[in-house]
Amino acid sequence: MSFEVRDRDLLARVGRLETKGGAVETPLLLPVINPTVQPVSPKTMGEALSCTALITNAYIVKKHFGSEAVQKGIHRLLDFNGVVMTDSGAYQILVYGDVEVTPEEIVQYQEEINADIATILDVPTGWGVSKQYARHTVNETLRRAKELTKIKTREEIAWVGPVQGGQFLDLVARSAREMGKLPFQIHALGSPTPVMEQYLFDTLVNMIMTAKMNLPPDRPLHLFGAGHPFMFALAVSLGCDLFDSAAYALYAREDRYMTEHGTARLRELEYFPCSCPVCVQNDPNDVMGVPKTERQAMLAQHNLYVCLSELRRIKQAIMEGRLWEHLELRAHGHPSLLQALKKLGKYSEYLERHSPVTKRSGLFFFSHLGLIRPEVVRHRERLFERYSPPEGANVLILLPQTRMKPFHKSRDHQRFLKEIERKLGDRMGEAHVCTYAAPFGIVATELDEVYPLSQHEVATPLDMETISYVARQVANYITSTDYDEVILLQDVETWKRKIETACRKACKEKGIPLTILRTKKLGESIRSSGR
Ligand SMILES: [Zn+2]
Image (cartoon, rainbow, N blue to C red; front, top):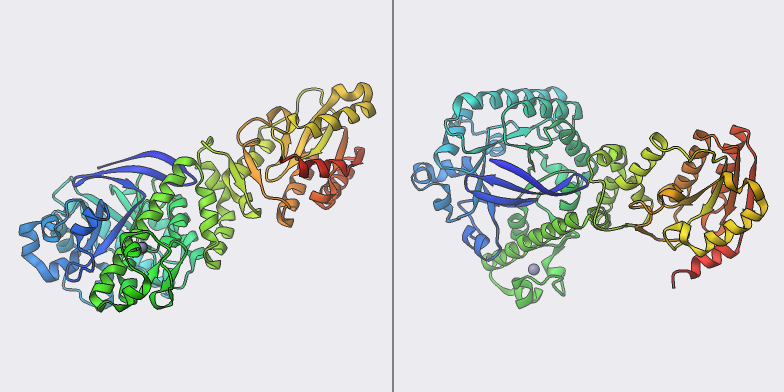
């Protein structure tokens, strides 16, 4: 098995996962197939929906089909030509208390039915459990993981090493570190159902990030039980490569209609906001009118379609370097998603280190949420760690951002520099011009054409968080450099005097003079230069 990354954005990757059953592209959704009940047949999934892989439960297969599945093999049993992953059924065994199957038997059975990707019988941590129990699930899962090498007889099957620990992040970290040392090809994070059901996405972010930061980065990561398209962007952005969805069928059973923003009840819909074959050929009333089994199949098909198209959208966003924008858009689908995105701030440095440096497209800055994004963090880190002003630059001239980029080519900047030159006279040779700008903070003129300092669009008026962020960057810049004079051109309308206050404080601290020039004209010309 091999996993080759073709494109990246944030921690997301478009990759090619080679298995013995064929190659699949990630991020990948594997619909969950219950071999005893199939609202949409695996054959239809492959042919009509272009599903390249699916996942089924080895425990259920063993219980219902036993040796028949061994004789036919799982692909023929399900009538599916693509890649088949099997879960071990650990969850069912726990829930239903059936312990007749041993970890060894489940490993052997998955080999016998010829799964392409298989999972050891892990012990899910679950939710609301004591730390002591959680520790037990981590230790027992690790013990079973170590046994695998002794039990397995086939080398070509890709094995999944599940990470446990639940909401105890120190346990998740240890579980991931230890599991990562073992020769697994894929890892999985057990995401307790309540995290998904109760929309505890900030908890999920912590769990995924902790696992991700402690696992070998070159192995794909599967997120168990995350089957709703409205959170794919978040999970993919954090580096999850594989998903399984039972939700498409479970929701259909309850007449719930998935969209990429959330879930609707079929009876509440007047129109279908979707162009899949089911939605184009019917309206919600028609679907309400068909018998339950048929309706369930129609909804399941639609739900799957929405999941798959959202993943295609995400892949396109990765290729274009616009995943952050897509993530922000999706985060506005539900307050708990937005909350999760806000809390991503604490991982912003890790995200920065592992995100691509150059991109095909410029960035859109909508609000202070964008201050977490890697490009902004990277600029800040580089400015304070690597940058020093040009030799002999003693006078810092701070000009406000203009709509025109690069800033130094804007007519406003050129005009104001002429005015400043008249004031400074001979000292103009010692001047160093910087722009204070959202979202990057300080942009030195000699760098203002470097990506993405000119390749971005900012929504104005700026929000207070953004203004305060830029003001902090300005103050930090003044205090960390050695200019002996600062000249600030104010744009009160945009910056609400925050920059002025920050400069005053920083210059006082440094004991250097500050000259403040005010202009209304600039504000006007900023507003009109967009034509
Ligand atoms: Zn549809």
